[in-house]
Length: 106
View 1 (tube, rainbow, N blue to C red):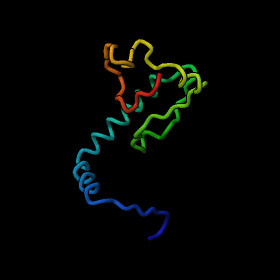
View 2: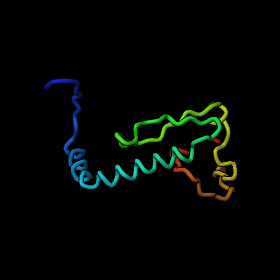
View 3: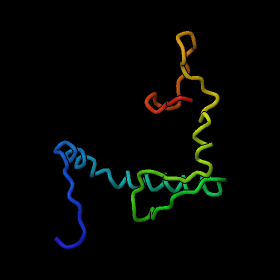
């Protein structure tokens, strides 16, 4: 082998899943690129937000990464102030907009 390479161990089940998903990869690629471009358009000019740009024409973006000014302030405030979470047995449960595993203390 010539050039740079990485050796990865892949279980048989992961390999089987990958092979089963391979025929639909082009559809996934187009959807992810379209979604990333939509994020780029929507975030353009947003105050305090910088998109970490990628070459979307030559990659299949998995995440849209942004840098946020005043990050500490953003993460300190409740993301959904209009949503009450179940905090005691007498309160009425309101469905959270995020899965319970991601809903931390607000």
